[in-house]
Amino acid sequence: MKTEGYSLEDKTDNRAKILSCAIHLFYQKGYDAVGVQEIATAAGITKPTLYYYFKSKLGLLEALLQEKCEPICARLEAIANSYQGEPKDTLYALACALVDIAKEDREFYFLLLSLNYSARENEAFKAVSPYMKQMFQILTEFFLRAGDKIGNMNGRQEQFAIAFQGIISHYILVMDERGPSLEEATDPHAIWELVRQFMYGIYS
Amino acid sequence: MKTEGYSLEDKTDNRAKILSCAIHLFYQKGYDAVGVQEIATAAGITKPTLYYYFKSKLGLLEALLQEKCEPICARLEAIANSYQGEPKDTLYALACALVDIAKEDREFYFLLLSLNYSARENEAFKAVSPYMKQMFQILTEFFLRAGDKIGNMNGRQEQFAIAFQGIISHYILVMDERGPSLEEATDPHAIWELVRQFMYGIYS
DNA sequence: TTGTTAGTATACCAATCGGTATACGGTTTG
DNA sequence: CAAACCGTATACCGATTGGTATACTAACAA
Image (tube, rainbow over all chains, first blue to last red; front, side, top):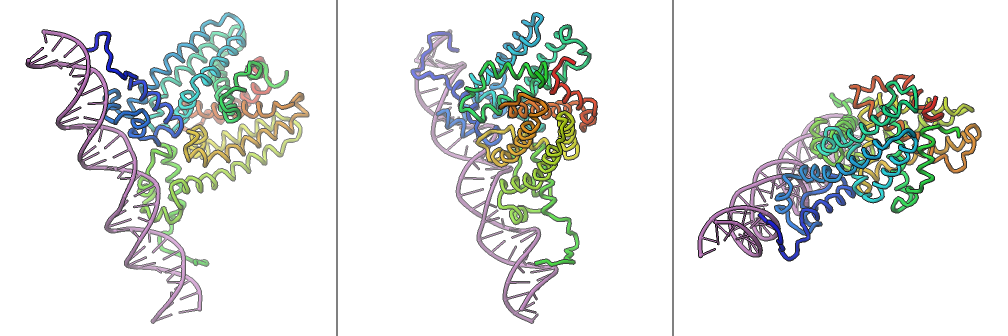
C-alpha cells in the first residue's frame, strides 16, 4: 500500500502509458486488429503487466472509454445546460466544443466515432454504446428545452438531435481527410455556417 | 471450361454463398473479428474453396464491395443526374433511395457505414474508401449543378454534401436502433421532413 | 527481521489466425 | 481413351491470438 513519497525510480506510470498506446493503436488499426502483445510492446512493458491493470483486452477498452468519455459528456452537458434563450448560440458553442474535442484529442475522437459505427454484436460497440447514447440524450434534452424558442417542437427534438450530431460528425470526418490536423475545421466562420444552415436551411 | 448445360448436382453457387455469408458475418461482428474459417463454415464449404474464388480475406472484401457498391453508385448517380430544376425533389429522391437501399440490403448498408468509419490504416477502410468518395462526389456535383436554383453556391457544394450525407446516415443509424427492420425509417413524411429541414432549416 | 504487498517479467498455454501444398473426383476437350 | 481443367477437401504450415501460472524484485509494515 503506497501511502505517499513512493518513488520506484522510473515511475512513468505504466498504466497511463498502456492507455495512451492503446488509444493510438486502436485508432490506427481498429480494436479487433490490434493484439494485446502489440499494445504491451508499444508501451514498453509485457503482457502480464497489462493484465495486472486491466482484466482483459475489453476491460482495457472499457477503462479507456470511461476515463475519456466522462469529462467529454460533462463538458457538453455544461454547455447544453447553459442555454439561456438563444438556441443557435448554444448550438454554436456545442459545435465548437465538439470540433475542439476532436482537435485536442484527435485520435480518441475518431476512435469513438469508429466504435460507434462498428458492428452491433462486436464487444467494442457494446462498450461505447452507453456513452454515445448519453451524448445523444444531452442533445435531445437541449432541443426539448429550446422548444419554447424554436416552436412547434412536438416530438421533433430527437430528429433535430440526429441531424445536428450527424452534421457535426460528418463535418469533422471530412475536414480531417483534408487538413493534416483539423486546422481548417476549427475555423469559427465555417462552424457558424454549419449551425446557421442547420437552423435556417440552405436559403440564406 | 464449362460452356453451358453444366450441372454438378447441388450447384448452389458456392461463390455467391461465400459472399452472402461474409456480408452477414462482417456486418454482425466486424471485418477483423471474423475469421476466414468462420466464413467457410457458415457457407458450408472449406477454406481452400474460399481461397479458390478469392485471393485473400481482403480480396473477398474487395470483391464484395465492388459487386454491391457499383449498382448503388449507379442508382444514386441516375437520380442525381435526373435533376431538372427542383433541388429539393431530387434531394428527397436521393434520401428515399438511400433509405431504400438501407432497408433492402440492410446488413450490407451498415457494413458499408461501419467500414467508412473504421480506422484509417485498416485495410478494410482502404478498400471501402474509393466507393465512399465516389458517392460523396455524386452529391457534390449535384449541388454544384443545383447552384443556379439555390444561389450563392460558391464553394459551398461540398459543405452541403457533407451535411446531407451526415444527416441521412445518422437518420438511418438511429432509426435502425428503434425499429427492428427500418419500418419507421421509410416513412415518406419523415424523410421529407429531413430534406425540408435541410433546405429550409428548423424554422418552418 | 519477517511478512506483505504492488508491480513486473519469463515462460508457457490451447486455440485460432490467414494461407497453402497436394490430391482427388467430375467434366470437358482433344 | 487420355489430357486438361475446374472445383473441392484433407491435412498441414508458421505465426499470432487472448490469457495465465509462477517467480522475482523493491518497498513498506510489523
